[in-house]
Amino acid sequence: MSVKSKYSVESIQKHETYDWLLFKHYAKRLTNIKYSFGLFDEKKYLSGICTFGIPAVSQWADNYLELNRLCVNVLVFLIQIKIIMDISIKLQIGYIQD
View 1 (cartoon, helix red, strand yellow):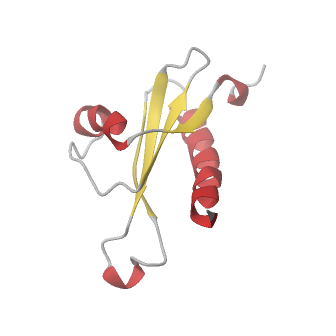
View 2 (spheres, rainbow, N blue to C red; view 1 turned 45 degrees about the vertical axis):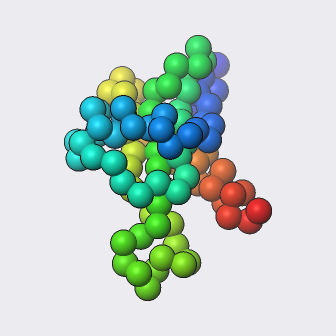
View 3 (cartoon, rainbow, N blue to C red; view 1 turned 30 degrees about the vertical axis):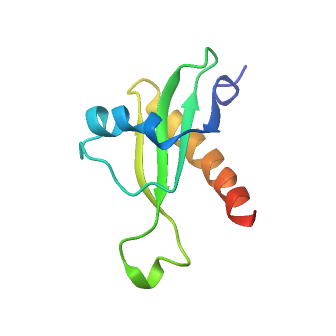
């Protein structure tokens, strides 16, 4: 079984990211969140979060989203980052097309 098959990425509610952003992320503050995704292990334990929001630069606000927070547990974090980025971007494209 590959490491990637042990994790799944799902859309989560904004409020589910707050503890991660306030207590685990180095910035220790909330940000503009339009889309939020959680990285879950095989036991459905939340192992990381990824949020996207509207850029602060007003000329880009209508056409772009920015990755504004990415936070994962320390263990196997490089693999987790790749998984959550790959899948959340694919899920985000689906949201944008709807």
